[in-house]
Image 1 (cartoon, rainbow, N blue to C red):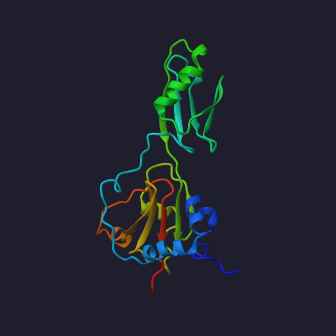
Image 2 (spheres, rainbow, N blue to C red; image 1 turned 90 degrees about the horizontal axis):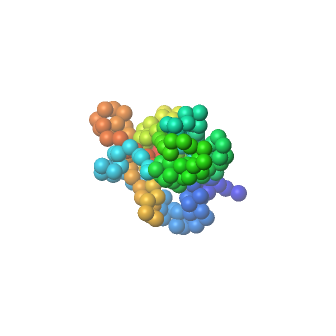
Length: 216
């Protein structure tokens, strides 16, 4: 059986669930995909797109530093596991994902109440990790997990860079699901590489970058 349009460009396992489900409806997907991948006009960027991603709530993959000023032996640096939890001395597993650092501090004060003489705890985000996907004419298409705010060009470099024989660097597409809608942005990264543009597009969790092939 022939592969679908999407399967020819990226293994299904590398796509987020929402986009994999979309491929089950070929007519709908093609209606979205054709204008996206054929578009040549660069999308003007606003301050939001050029602002490094930062989230208030903790998520899987984030690394947190937990400090107990009155009980330094309890201090810990933990990466939040895929199940959203961290493992701490004396109290065992605690759910961290989905909470703000302040909310996690409040919960830790509660679960450690009997062990603390000084009722203080501090939770700080050391690094954040989130998935983005790079496909099309790059050397190593697939998912990457940056642990810091990352731009579209940096993500492509993490994927091995542009395929020098095929990549169309002037019409790179970023797909983003936001407020229940699928948005797309077209980027001329050749101008960035040549120093003609200094605008960086910062990625958010589950963004998809598609590098099309040159027409000739």
